[in-house]
Length: 370
Image (cartoon, rainbow, N blue to C red):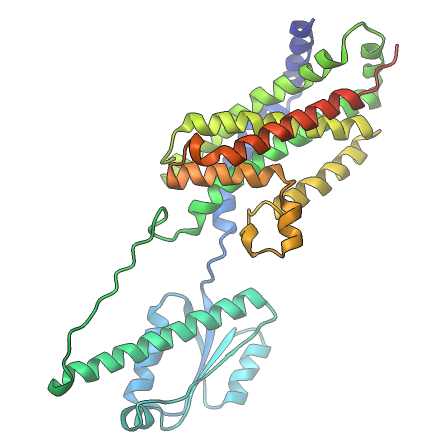
């Protein structure tokens, strides 16, 4: 019985001209484009400089800022008021004001004040940009101090050089952590939305009534809806792996089979969730809105954009019920650290619980009338 139900589902899928193409195009475009757009590293910050001192050191400081690669010098003003106008017109994001006597105070008193002002309409850009600029100024101060120490033979002393060694992501590339998470987001969209829309579509065209009067058991019916999208989930994530390798040279440090095992549980769980939604929704529009609400909630609580540890305690508690959280952790840990089953026990138990719970709910909530 299950064999014929599966044959029906696969034929129905491939008769749809759009869906097979979308299964290839969606992961292809998502893994290619999303990591470039979802980059929280702030660059190309427009900077306005007000240099009252016009000394060698003030010019050197401006050169340091420009050489950092984070700032673009878009305005040079004679006063703070003029510089502020460039911010109001949208030409500049930040202002660096160097006071008169900057070099003199730096040489004689070994300290000098400068002003950093940021437009925080975009809070993230203003905050991170201010941090970047303050760090550049600190590094400039350290370089000047080092020159003085080296130039004075009486102050010569052993020097220490700090060489940072970053584990798992040595280049600190944001896309390396984003690509595994984006793979799961696409997998969730495919394995959640399509099963949800499948049964609802049959409700709307009336074909499900024919199924309801047959002796097919509810378990077989739900399995026939799950298995095709379980297979499609493997296709989608395999395409994602291939695109990540070709486009970004990203390959997992750990075993790829570990990812496939956890992905199979995740697709099973999320497809079951989609079927639960379809059992309660009466129209395609209802199913779309319900799935959209839950998927967006799961995404924002999963740690895709911000670490779960940075969330308030109540949000961390709610994130426990997001299947995406555990699957994103699995992909990041396997891709970047090479983690195996021993390090991923919590995620394994969570995904098994989600799969059993959602699919059990899907079977029990399906109303089959004779």
